[in-house]
Amino acid sequence: MDFQVVVLAGGASKNLTPLVSEEIPKALLPVANRPVLSYVLELLESSNLKDLIVVVEGSDAALRVGGWISGAYVDRLHVEVAAVPEDIGTAGALRAVAHHLTASDILVVSGDLVTDVPPGVVAATHRRHGAVVTALLCDTPISGISETGSKDKAKKLGRYNIVGLDPTRQFLLLIASGAEVEKDTRVQKSILGAVGQMEIRADLMDAHMYALKRSVLQEVLDQKDSFHSIRQDVLPYLVRSQLRSEVAKIEEGWNTTITSKTNLIWLSQHREIAPSAFHNGHELDANGSLSAQSTHKCCAYIAGKNKYCARLNSIQAFIDINRDVVGEASHLSGYSFSAQNNVVHPSAELGSKTTVGPQCMLAEGSKLGDKCSVKRSVIGRHCRIGSNVKIVNSVVMNHVTIEDGCLVQGSIICSNVHLQERCVLKDCQVGAGYVVTSGSEHKSESLAKR
Image (cartoon, rainbow, N blue to C red; front, side):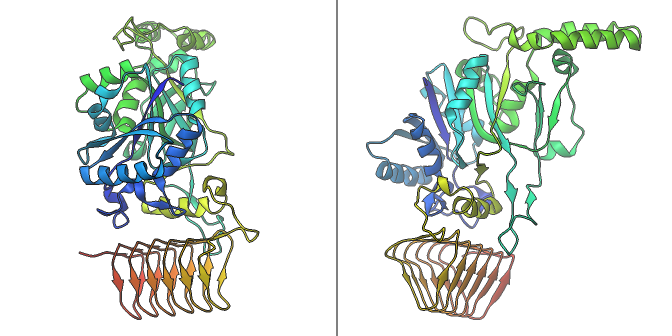
């Protein structure tokens, strides 16, 4: 594929506090003891996309991410790491590296995406339809888990996308998200008229993998300097401005109808010829530009229900994805699971009567004392865990000390944390280097150094 690839790896990501820090930017947060960015890089590598631009917000974060990539992917990938200002937004990040983009088509991928959908299927859909943008859509992930580990009590993520598709489910006609969904959603009658009918879906997630025609992307970024986000600004703009050459014709037809009967006849006729508005629409001009008179196409590739697709863009998503990658999506982890359906590194040490259950991971150099129980959890490298400790549905990062008699449930424990004896943590996040005092109990708290 002669696509140029841009990976948007983010930076400090305030909504992931206290997980992110100066030492661990978002791109290096661990998923099954591997940086989340590794999942996108290896997905691209497996599709033979090895020449990449990775955009990181903040110069310090860019140095850390660049250092990790150069060590982990030496002789495997050619990666240019570009530092951009913090909080510049995804559109701003693309604007900042636009002078590096020369290919006719660009593949833009979020660095927090964990998926087994090959980028090639999105690129092929894009080329087949001659689209200006093609977005990967996936089923909205299941969020949360019950104490027994089942998803019976779990729920879909709260804020849905509203997506409008043509009857063939190939063309993207409407997209709204976040706060927009809570309001009435307007549908342009020009587009609805062109396709005759629209399928409205509220169960699909925008995976933040986009194939884009470079000339159109650059024109939009140049002309719309207030655009901050691909998802919130650029994509809706391209979707809204489809079929511009059809607008006058359709609205004129609508306005000159006299009776309801005539209107129904006209609409049914239009429905029959509708696909031509997309399939045989006007091409972009000679420069591939998005002129006021042009018809352009916005397409969607909808991943099959058997595919895994999630983004690490919240605290809950961090827990969910770690759970999934050592559970139902273990094929993404890159590890070989034992007959007990877990991964215990040969150098890890387990005390007497200590059990590590299925869907668990215990990394190298970690030690557990006697009578410990670990269920559906990921434990990082070189952790020291005392006796009679219970860890359930949790992620424990590297170099963590947990003293005797502690209970950790539904929580995230960042690196170099010290839990003194008999601590109880339920649904908490503990920032790097924090000390939790003996006998303390915390529920649904975020604990971090000030």
